[in-house]
Amino acid sequence: MWTKTLLGLIFLLHTFVFSQEDTRELGNLPNAVSETSGLLFHNGKLITHNDSGNTPQLFEIDTVNLQITRTITVSNVENVDWEDLAQDADYIYVGDFGNNTGTRTDLAIHRISKLDFENSDTVQAEHLSFSYEDQTDFSDTGISDWDAEAFFVLGNQLIILTKQWISNGTVAYSIPKTPGTHVASRLEAFDSEGLITGATYNSLSDVLFLVGYSSFLGSFTIRVDEPTSASIFNGVPERIEFGGGLAQTEGITYVDVNTYLVSSEYFTNSNPTITLEAKLFSFNTMDMLEPEEPEEPEEPEEPEEPEEPEEPLEEEMPNLESQEQNLIVFRTFGSEVLEYELNTDRAVFGRAIFDTTGRRMEYLLAEEIEGTTIDLSSFGSSVYYLTFYLDNGVLAKAFAK
Image 1 (tube, one colour):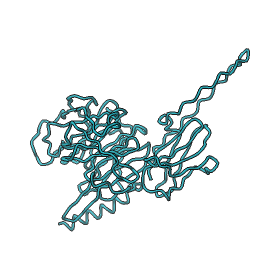
Image 2 (cartoon, rainbow, N blue to C red; image 1 turned 180 degrees about the vertical axis):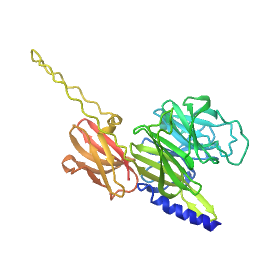
Image 3 (cartoon, helix red, strand yellow; image 1 turned 90 degrees about the vertical axis):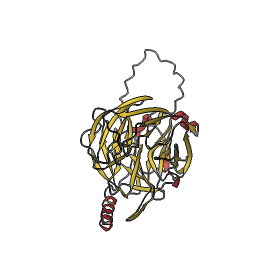
Image 4 (tube, rainbow, N blue to C red; image 1 turned 135 degrees about the vertical axis):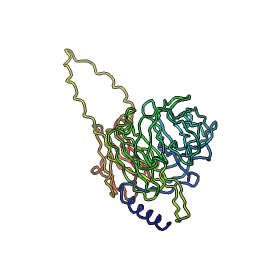
């Protein structure tokens, strides 16, 4: 029996390694987060946590060396079964809604101020308690369809996605993203053909990605374009087999418009013998934003009498987030070359690449820049920032190698 199972696992390993071809393994995660579950990218750092029965702590991880740089304790809650992370402009949300047997009546989401998170290693959370509007049976059946390991922010709502152990699909529910006691409204179901374990909504591209795995640890992602509260699984979602081999994929987050990070949990099995380390992966999409067409300047009216020129005002540093469309980066699968498109009429003084610690990896003066490609063969697997120095400030864009 185990031989047949092992052969099935080997077949799946072969299949998934060659499916999503742009998947890259960045390395093993530290042992302290071997049960990694949720994943978030914030302020140039990766944030994760362990799942049920572990400490109520968030861990910041350097994306270059994959080492823990900071541990943040949430002092007023327990980790009953933390399963995923989400964020908006002001808060980090922790989903404590793991519920394998379907018996929990204390499902919760904890909300942490980003200001508190960034300024202290000990924080307190506000609480959002909820129950599903259509769950009436809380008896222990061993496994249930009322487990959940994924959620994301969409407008003023938190969208929770169940992990259906019996039906092998998922159902989307919504609650307001404000503290209090809520009844989660059922939105719609989707046949994911696997267990959904993480979600991230990329507001830069209006794309939702789900991550999960099958009973044989065959990992996959599901892409949904332009989800709305009226139709979470808008159109025809695309199911993509994940190219990371056998893995118990747990978390997913976006870095920029077309770069995503995925984590997998430590897994061991005795018959057949399988040991999978907790790992971090990345993959890219081609969701590049079209540059905005510059507005035609209005023809100035000729003054009747020449006026004295006014003193020029000192220009402010440009808002980098508002210039997302001015710098586009992409890379073809298997290539060690990063391609970019810089759309600006400002004078360029230089080009640099930084890692997430702020260390400058490369720098060229304007006259040394040739073409719009960069050789990445000497760079290790990590997240970097392509940076241009302009006459009115700095323009930067993250990318993963």
